[in-house]
Length: 114
Image 1 (cartoon, rainbow, N blue to C red):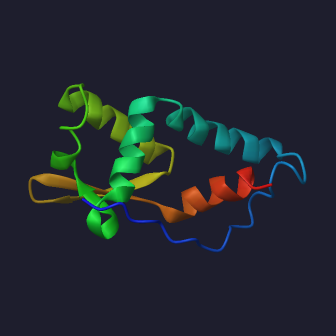
Image 2: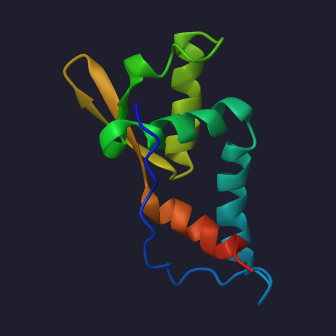
């Protein structure tokens, strides 16, 4: 496992930084789900762990060890992150591999920029 930095991508046109203009109602509703998904410490750590794996993707089999929760609980947290649009996954044989969606992180970074 390596600590690899995520690439900086062109910011999507959806949201201007909050310090420049207020969020639209639609953007606020959309982003609230993302922040809600990130408000759980296990989910925040999962996102960080997935992003830090060599090649930018992690097998679900590698994600259960670092946490003091059951495998079904990890699966639940991964589903919440996926539904929030922060990660994506793909089944390969027995295992599911997950990766972070850079556009989602870029959107959050743009929103929080000063």
